[in-house]
Length: 161
Image (cartoon, rainbow, N blue to C red):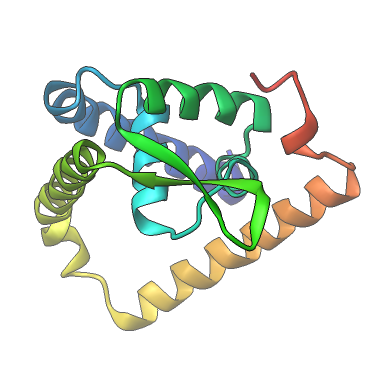
């Protein structure tokens, strides 16, 4: 296995282990909600004037898929939709009080996970952080270019749902 394959496998393994470890806590604390709903709540909580398009772009999902999630969250009383007086066409989302509680629980879990992993990150030098961040940015730009080159418009595709 060459170094590229080792890096990709290493990142996949890291991600899978994080998901495994975090899953039990997340499901225990937020068991009534699917991961996609929790991520949607998180995004809306962190980003003012969230709408279907912004959510779809952020999660690389279709607008239709996001619409289904947001409709469920509205029905559950977690988010509410609103329009701006100067733009009656666009629909935006914000958290309800119940949504803010879920958002806070999710944020507390993330803090707990950061605390769990702190021992590793304390050993990482600034230079190592800079190298990792640089690599992640380069790889992300490359993947963005590939998406563009292949003409993939995730927000209009139905095969991702």
